[in-house]
Each structure stands twice: as structure tokens, then as C-alpha cells.
Length: 272
Image (cartoon, rainbow, N blue to C red):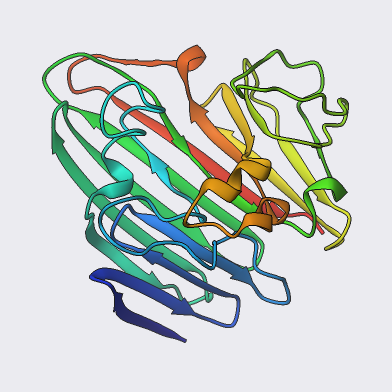
């Protein structure tokens, strides 16, 4: 079992290898890059052309959007994903599971975030704890998880049946509902929902369950062929991922009073 510390273009990377799991993350953005459980394919998608520098978020893995979601102010999706976090805990436990805790303090608004990761061969549990400062603040956030899939047109998603949603895509396309099958660009905020979601991958023959805490909203996102306009994603890689996000978005704003706390969490489980 090992913990390795490396650097890529100035970004500090922590890598863990145990009999149960191989995983890595960057301190920049508290950004989980990889989760590969024993006897499983990689669960997270990471673009092979992702840009590793401090100017932008890394394309893939789990970007942390905090303390706001979307382009409501600059920088888009908040400070978390483009800031250097402090390493508080990085350890391999006696059973071979991995535990990491990182922290970040900001001044505008004045508050603190604690990102915690617990990973083994079956489960990835990620939480984002917000500790507010002396002034009330309306917070939005998301754990923007990119799941690796065999083919976007050969998956289906259950658990969102009959849940209201808003479509944020500029040119929404029809998708098959109940279960959800994706045939074009999708950018949906499902609200209200607290039920588990399952991602069924017909190519990988794998089912992943996504459970959320501190969240009544789930985002489903794939940029589709607009990926050709990204310099950090190959043109056809839209076929290789789908984002299912635990979120506090516009329909699920967290109203934090002075010194109040909130925990947003996502638990990913390999069902089969």
C-alpha cells in the first residue's frame, strides 16, 4: 500500500494504491481525478487533453462548484475548483480504504469549506462541508461528477421518473424518459428529488448507484457535440461520460445564517 505525492505543471497530486482501490486527486480544486476499485474499470471520466494548470478547472473527475453554482458571478462556479486547498488528512486505513480531508478558507464571502473523501472497492463517499462566517449568505454548490461510460447512447438512468426538471440547454433535444436515455445535449436540473439514482451501462455491464445528502436537486449534464469547441476535451469524448451531480442549485438554495453549517454529499456505489 502506498501514498505518492507528485506535481504536474505546479499542481500537487496525491495518489493512493491499496489492495482495494487506486485513486488520485489534486490539492488544486480538491479535485478527485480517479477512482478505480479492485476488479473494476475506472469509474470517473478524465479527459486525455485536460489542462493541468492553475488557470481553470480540470476537465473530468469531480470538480467542486462552491460557494456558487453557475455563472452568477466571477469566477464561474465559484472559487473552490481553481483554488489551492490545504491537506489536512491523507491516509490509508488498516482495511485498505482511503481517507482524505482538505480545507479551504475564503474572504468574499467569509467562510470555510472542508472536502472529505472516503473510498474503498465498492463505495466513493465525498462530502463538502460549509462553515459560514459572521454574515448570512445564500449558497449554491455542486459535486460535478463525470462518470466514465461505454457509450452515451447505450446507458439509461433510473430514479428520476416523474421528477420535475428545468432544461438549461440552449437547444434542448428530445430524450427518452422513464428511464432517461440521452440522445443529444442535456443540461437538466431535477428538483425536488432525494431518491437514489442508478446509472446502467450496457457496454460495461455495470450499474452505479448515486445517493445524495444535503441536496434536493440532481443535475444531469452532457455537452454532446459542442465538445468540439473545447480545447480540453477530444471531439468525440462526449460519448464517454455523463455527469450526475449532487447539487444545491437555484431551486435548492441553502440559506446560511451567521456561523451556520451545511454538508453536501454524494455517495457512489458499485451495484454490479
